[in-house]
Structures are given as C-alpha cells and as structure tokens.
Figure 1 (tube, rainbow, N blue to C red):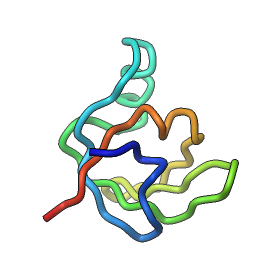
Figure 2: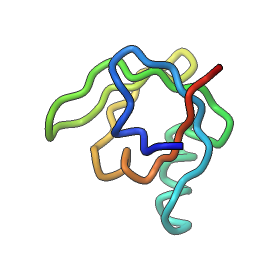
Figure 3: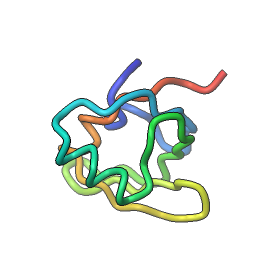
Length: 75
C-alpha cells in the first residue's frame, strides 16, 4: 500500500483507503473517489496537481490530497 502521490504515470491502481477526517473523505466522495475504485495517473507535476482518470472522468487533485489516498497495485 502506498499514497497515490507515489504512483507512476499511466499506472492503474485500486483505492484502498483515505486517511484523514470526515471532511476530506466527503470531499473525495463528492469528486467520485471511493474505496475500491480503479484510478489511473495521467499526469504528475512536481508540485502541481495530478491528473487522474476515474471511470469516464478526469480529475485534478492536489498533492496534499493525493498523499491521503492510499492505493495498491492491481494484480
């Protein structure tokens, strides 16, 4: 298990958990990120937002939030 911020480009991973309080969990759920989902990292900038593919959508997520999303490789 690792934070989403550590995932390489074009890598597909499964969302395992979200660390943090109810506020961040609700915010991510509102964006469509829930435990069990598959996420693909499309773009990573050093300090800027990450671009993710989730279902048929694209999301921009700051590195701080990405650090709170725990993922694992899909086997």
